[in-house]
Image 1 (tube, rainbow, N blue to C red):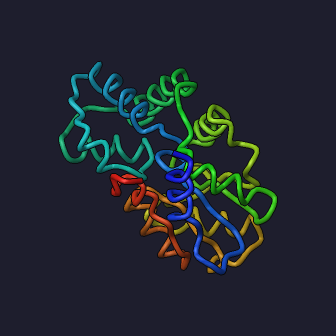
Image 2 (image 1 turned 90 degrees about the vertical axis):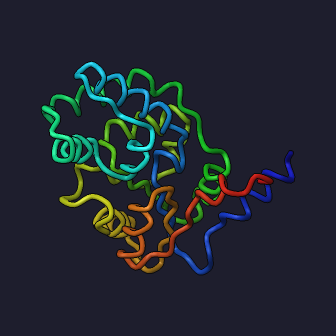
Length: 207
C-alpha cells in the first residue's frame, strides 16, 4: 500500500525546473466535489430546478455566480445569482468539515512546504477556500490564497494564476500548476505555466 502511494506521488511530482507551485483547491487538494454537488442539488431543488451530476462536473472551475447565470441563460430558470449563490455557500460552509484531503496531491504540497513559495488559486469565494483548507488541515502550507474576489475574470482566463505568481514574487513561467478541470488547465497554459493534471490519478486503476 505504501509503495502504491509513493508511485502515485511520483506520477504527479512537478517537472523541473520550477520556483513555485500553485494548487487549485476543490478536486485537487480537497475531495469536496461530492459535497458541492449535494449542496447544489438541495439549493436548486428547492426552486424546482433539476441539476444533474453531468451538468455539475461540466461547470468545474467556474464560480457559483457563473454557474447560476449559465443555468438561467441556457434553461430560462428564474434564479437570482446573488441570493442562490449565497445560500449555496452558506450550506457548504455547514458541511465543509466532512471534506478530506486528496492525499497524493497534499503530500506534494507538504513535501515542498518551506522549500518553494506555494499558493492556492480557486474559483471559490475566499471564505469558502479558507474554510476548506482549514477543514483538511492544509491552510498553513500556503503563502498566498487567490479567490474569485481577487480577479475580474475567472478561469479559463489566466488572471488567477498570474496574480498568484505576482504575489509570490516569482516569474509566471517558473510556476507549476496543479489542476483537475479543463478550465483550470487552460488558464494555467494561458498564463505560460506548466500544469500537472491530477486527473491522471483517477484514470489509472492500478494507482
